[in-house]
Amino acid sequence: MRIRFYGAVRTVTGSMHIVQTARGDTVLLDCGLFQGRRAEARARNTTLPLDPAKVKAVVLSHAHIDHIGNLPSWVKRGLRCPIYATGATVDLTGIMLRDSAHIQLMDVRHLNRHLRAGDTPAEPLYTPEDAERAISLLRGRNYRQWFDVVPGLRCIYHDAGHILGSASILLEETENGTARRLGFTGDIGRPDSPILQDPEPFPSGADVVLTESTYGDREHPPQVELPEELRKVLFQTIARGGKVLIPAFALGRTQAVMYALKGLQREGKLPEVPVFVDSPLATRATEVFARHPECYDREAERYFRAEGSLFDFDGFSPVRSVEESKQLNERKGPCVIIAASGMCEAGRILHHLDHSLGNPLNTVLIVGFQAEHTLGRRLVEKQSRVRVFGQERDVRAEVVVLNGFSAHAGRSEMRSYLDLCRPRGPLFLVHGDETRCTAFEQYLKSNGFPDVRIPREGDTFEIR
Image (cartoon, rainbow, N blue to C red; front, side):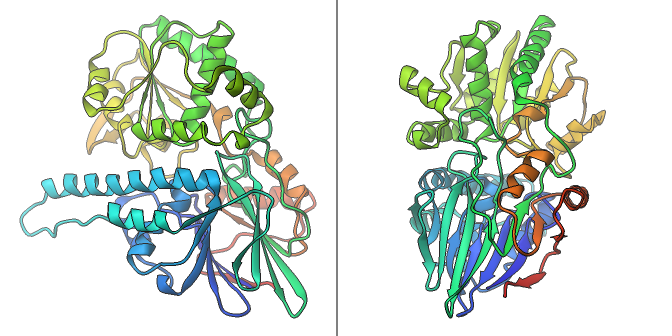
């Protein structure tokens, strides 16, 4: 079995790795959309490393767009094989890919409206029809049950605790009576996170393990402090008459914030303020949660049985139409607006930032990882001026970062996880900025991991 590193190598986006079995079958681990500068993203997402028609199977870790979002591009170019995922990931992937295809069309229409004479009209990366063909190839599988991927190669999923349906992956190839195992952590959540079960390591004994390293250079604050930190941000902003804008991924982070707000209200600690979730995609993703209580931890399961919902609370309103979204910008007085995208690169949050960044009464509350070259990263870096819709904007609003909401494990949490599934051979670090990979490599080596490597795009490793 051979692994070729391709996507999310020395970066955190576009997850994809290529596995080739001893009998010559090709399998993809994830098929994510690369997100970043427009020209680079377009080039990476359209330049495929092999003929899609030759891929025999795809195995997905979870439904975030940087892990599934390029599937329609591969289908457009000839991919016709089964795409395996957990049941919850199958449901979420459907709504995520449909939304992504819609965004592709909207972006192209916007670009083509501003063409100059002689410019070539833009085309979408893929269409809704391509997305539907990809969705038709999805095949749901349960946690902790082996299933055949291709002849001689089987897979088992374990709960990664990152988002609903997320999984770490263990592949096992048997040839001439000898078994070889490749582990892929996918994205690993934090222990004791709300709603979801704790990350469940796959059994030790893998020959090679690929692990994420998103926060390989830092720790997260204790989660028990998070509700109080959130409460303080809300009260301080409301007291001065401002709005709280929360850029949040529609899948995972939005639900975590809503669950925390509901918890504050349950304890009588949530101020009387309207809360708007301005993301139809987030609303659809939230509906999927109700169909998969098997992914809940005990507390969430108890609340769900007692109340019928994990997320509804007094003062909460979903925003569905564009007109309703626009009206929020004209609204006077305090409110909370949760909107996608999580890195402030697209979606309705851009319109709210465009109207609100210049007001010192407002707060922009960052609750997730912000990749390099994104507007979200520039806000985290406290830049005084940023570009929104191509126009320079002064940043006078307060910017607050609460890393406790992160769905990724911190450095020591990852080490504890990897202690339970350490490989016999090398441990490869992927899905992390290069500086964070390097810091995590040094940290792991100083904590008893002798063979830690940071691959480059295109590197291969053969498991013998």
